[in-house]
Amino acid sequence: MKNTASDGTGLSRLEISFSFKPKNRRKSDNHPHEVDRTIEPGNLPRISKLMALAIRFDGLVRHGEVRDYADLARLGYVTRARITQIMNLLNLAPEIQEAILFLPRTVKGRDQIREKEVRPIAAVSHWSRQRKMWAKLTAGRMS
Image (cartoon, rainbow, N blue to C red; front, top):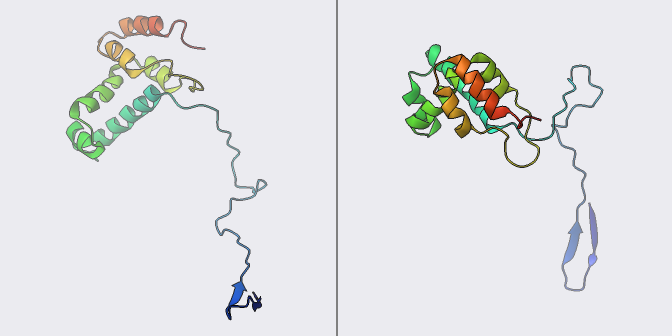
């Protein structure tokens, strides 16, 4: 702290300087417990997030943490119809679910596969037909 001379008005000015060091600094790069994680560029496709959400919601209902889909809708502030659309993704063949979960990130533009395009596939009860529809949908789109 330093007190400067009066500026002629009878009032003096007070200047204060301090240094600031944040308490919660990130750990150094050479910390032994730190895991090296590199984040890929781009965003996860929305359909991938919805597939993961459907799997999570199914687990919540199965374990009794949530009573039913109506409770999920109330908790998520969405309609029961929207929850049903999301949960219908579980009707897809397991390899299609896996493919959706591991779709490449969207770096530029729209997602390659959208949920609205997958709904008709999930409505088909035969997995062999689903696989054919999925192959047709993804042909030429996947990089």
